[in-house]
Every structure is written in structure tokens, then in C-alpha cells.
Length: 249
Image 1: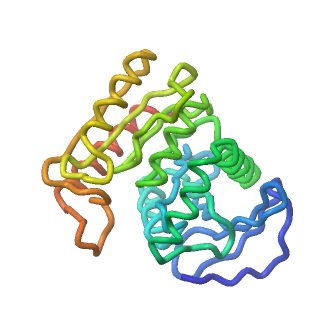
Image 2: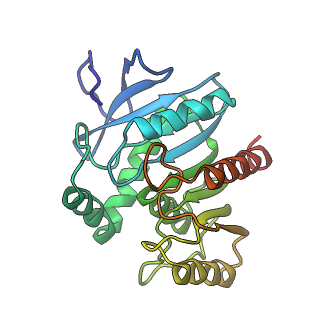
């Protein structure tokens, strides 16, 4: 889905907004290391607690903005960063693998993009000191990268996300609670991966909760696809709301 931008790009410290008629939030352009990225920000009130929502491997699309608007209706501000670049929304599997693979191979770049997006969120007025990070699939893996980096979030939540711990990393710096919601029938991220993450979190004494949903495949929350599972989506969304209520002020 394309959106019109009516202003020139500024640095990430001064994001530019363009109102989308189809949503209640704003698409914004910010810069990280001289490159333009297009995120999404919605807030029901100035002091709303923040959800930092990271996209799947097809980039920031209508799925994430819809989820952001759902959260805004519950009283949360949402900043959804863009980790691929303004206008980069891959549709072919090969392209999706290329963009995610680049960031999986270069964790420093992934962290720099996440840090730049957080700076843009802060400049937009988001309460980044009272925030939870969450993500779907690739975004879930990025959330765990934030957790291992000790990024300062009160909580880290993944929905059918990548769970592997990269070589040389651990959860010794993790500074918030971790919630993992996973499909037992996921063949892309297996139950062996799930077990390994549980052991990694336990080894670092990270407060965590990990839930699996029987019969749910990878991407079980994505509406209007053959992988969508209504029961698992409903239950995981309810648990997420409880987590937010108990974690954020």
C-alpha cells in the first residue's frame, strides 16, 4: 500500500508526518545513517504508554498498521519502525529473504536501525521510557535482539518469531520480562528452537513466560491467510493485553 508524503525528509530527530486517510495514525519518514525509512505512529493521548511494534519479513505493511490501530483503541501509543527502507516492501520470497538475511548477518546494523527508530519515536513524543517491544515473525527475532542488547524496554513480546540466539550473544543484559507466543505446529521455528530459548532465558535468570498453541503454524496471527488460526490469535492477543496491563504504567 502506498502513501503520499507531502514534506521533505529531515533527520531522524525531526520526523516528517503525512496523514493517511485510511488509518487513525501517521506515516512518517525519518533517517538513520543518511538513509530514509518510513514508519508509522499512532497515539490516543500524549502520555500513553508505548508499544514498539516491529514488522514481519515483508516490511511495514497494512497488517502492522492495523494491529497498531487495534492497540491505540486500547489506549496505547504505537510506533512501528521500518527496518528495510522507505518504499521497500518486498513481495517475493527471495526478496524477503535477502532483506532479512542482510540484517541477520549484520547484527550491528540491525541494532543501529532499531536505535534510530527509537530516536524517531522519542522525537515524535512517544513515551519510550514506558514501553514494551513486540514483533511478528522476523519482528519477533528483532525484539529478542533488543532484549539481548538490554535496550531498556519493560517487556519484550514475540508472536511466532524467530527464537535462535546468535553465536556469541546471551541474555545477560536483558532488562525486562519476556513473553513468547509460539505455534506448536510451526515448522519454520521448531519446538527445539523454543526449548533452546527457554534454557537460554533461564540460564540468565530472565523473567519469562513461553506459550505454545496446538495446531498453530508459523504466522498464525496473520489475517486472511491459510496460516491464520482464529483460536490461537484470540488467545495470544488476550494474553498480550494482560501483559501490557501488568507491565506498563
